[in-house]
Length: 335
Image (cartoon, rainbow, N blue to C red; front, side, top):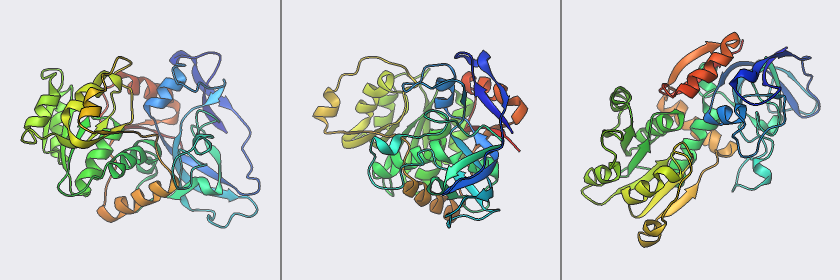
């Protein structure tokens, strides 16, 4: 089989293909023919050597893959050949609260990833593809969608609530779709007016360009009669966190899920004085994934895909992700 790896050093110029033997499932394992893989910012960080945990090279990249079961090992009862499945980002986190053990074994980082023609999964590290989603659509779910779901459900999103989203990457677009399905009101920021227009077409109540209006925290408060939003899905990190703390209401919630704005200093006074809950979100469990999939199937949610690349164009997909011009998810069709 062919696999897409980072090897001989970090950097996008070290991406390439290798031939490896087709894997065979052992006891409790499931062999999946991968059909679609979606990229995340984490993949870019791993490929460029900037991910906190690092990676042992060579490493097959990619954490998010979907495909069909082609073989099962002894003792497997949950899956059968032909089942349409998605791999979990954290195969060792079935349910319950997060723990260090639960976050070990993530694909594309701690172990080889899913950018390969065939991948072995543990029986409990898979979920069924919801509804009639294609393999490419299903591949967008494990990281970005589950992260958005965890952020919203952990922050009490629902009818009557106002949610502030940052940007139009994969997590934010999924959060827009889910928040609307949950009955919430959605505000969104972006540095691109065309992307804001697309978000408005998808159901956002209002949007602001943070480049032309850098005081977007004040804008958010004006959109809520001065009170502040109930929940911020924070993707910028310390570079935007202080404005998020100003934008959220007293007793509100900030779900911290990214560091796109880079490192910096953060004054926690607003968190203290406004009794804000600041929660780090690190993807989520299989149980969260399955709960989310029920909403996707029930509400007919369709993942937003920016562009699909063929497997032999995987390197171009990484460069496209790096450009930051995408709206929604960047996907690679493997088979």
